[in-house]
Length: 423
Length: 181
Image (cartoon, rainbow over the protein chains, first blue to last red):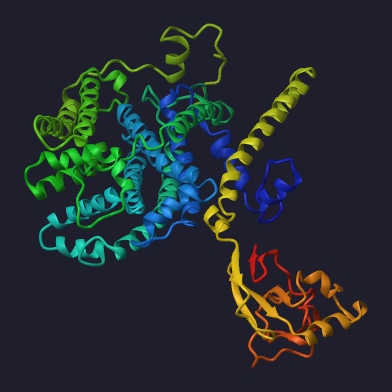
């Protein structure tokens, strides 16, 4: 090794020359090539990679849309229509971006659900989990501000309702609202700052995603059994095993994405957003985009303004302390017979809230929303803490390889059970 | 991947190479298909192309006068030349011109010279449209940025510009009207 140069293993002279001075190739080989990964991933473990791809798609289409978009109240709507009609492939860029937001939330919701079901938030992955919640909050802010940009009726009234939420806070509420508006209502200054922030936040997300991945590569991935790999037999190199598995998942993801973009591009949107914003007429039935409906249902389930706002924000903020609410040492719900049912019921409550958020604020939806909201919080604040003490989990397998290869018998016949047990 | 393939039976090598080649080709086609809409979206949009022609009424322009019209965001010089100007443009031997082009090849009707008003050096707008402007040594246009002189046919005669003023595509839609573009 020459003085100061990295000791590179690469044979290609150009790669080697760069790698000796800046070992990015060694780093990629370590983190994505030979990176030891539990051998028992199921397809739920595709969704992190899918989210990464989705983020890049959103940034690329967004940058290209911004080349044609005008952030001014008198021109925004028409500039979006111009993108749809006149700009070459503008319809494609916009539909990919709009449906990409929906795909992003689908992917990330499954990713979060996976983390909750298999206990990926538990020690030592608490910080990894917290960074994930931060990413989700940034995504929500970005998606909300992006939806305002076309300046249709739903954009305008969605922005009005959501920004008015902050007026519920005592003392500082109105100050925050006028800070968001830059005026006395949602108007051109609001549109300008939302465009600026909508462009900025995705790059903040990239930064937090980087930290999320750094944290992941320190602790290593969780897995469906929720037990740590104990020997090299329990892991596989990331490449080619999981690059291949992720690629397969990516193909399925692209098929779903393409069906949405090419056959039902407005299915998840709201037709009222093709009416230009009118500050004098509120549409009869305002709904946020589908991915916000559960929180919207929680907001409307509470008859008190401040209470509703606090519970709505609390429904996601409670995820931050999830690692400390759930004290059970067993990660995977596979081995937690009671918590598993409680969590699947929580999933149902979440979906019920999603449904109720899209319905008018009338009976029976208000009562149903209240029951579902109560269970949503009870799961985190009562059921999980209690089960951590009371539940008797099923016996955990001895190791990942034993569970995967031998079903718990003696040394698995035929399997590579040579003396490899170093760790 | 290729290395592990080479390590196995020699018969497996061409097959692995073939698979790698097919995979790489497929990926290249896919990347190209995805990149193309992005690249193409940066070309002029259909509303821009629809606005790409300009009609000019010639009747009000008296002999010796010139007007400047906007075409695709650029100035176009429309000059109603006098007989003396036409003669001056046609008497010059082509051998004296940096960018040899006969005057007849640059006009459709002798009296009307239509050129894009952008200096072929670095894109400034030359002077010479107004009667009070400096018209340079050859009675055409003079670019104040770096001192290019154009004659009454819009051809470069002196200075750093490499080419004659560009003649845009235009047609006479009637005796007194042209459509540029």
